[in-house]
Image (cartoon, rainbow, N blue to C red):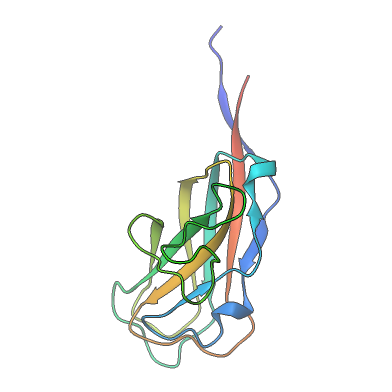
Length: 153
């Protein structure tokens, strides 16, 4: 009899929320706390970016970039700069995990990014705004992680 590979979902978590308030076009926000995948050891995750209104419509096919700054040595983040994963970090192509593509309307947008591979290290998430508009100053924007592993039966 052949084995089945099932995806086993785990508990979701909010990685960014108020950090996204007033996020200017061309700038980024970094999570202030680690997501401890060194302990959790999840293999995959799906992500949801919820954007609660814009002051004006973003550019058609504008993007929000998802970056991870991993703590490979258990102390310093691979953030392209001084290793402290904060406002002077340098998100780049080596930290990019995927793109959330927005539509050209100023209403709420709930966007998903699926099956992002996770490494077995703690990390901080970073969102970079490249949509052509600033985010509003509401308290309901968020980035959520939905981690899971494969289970063989």
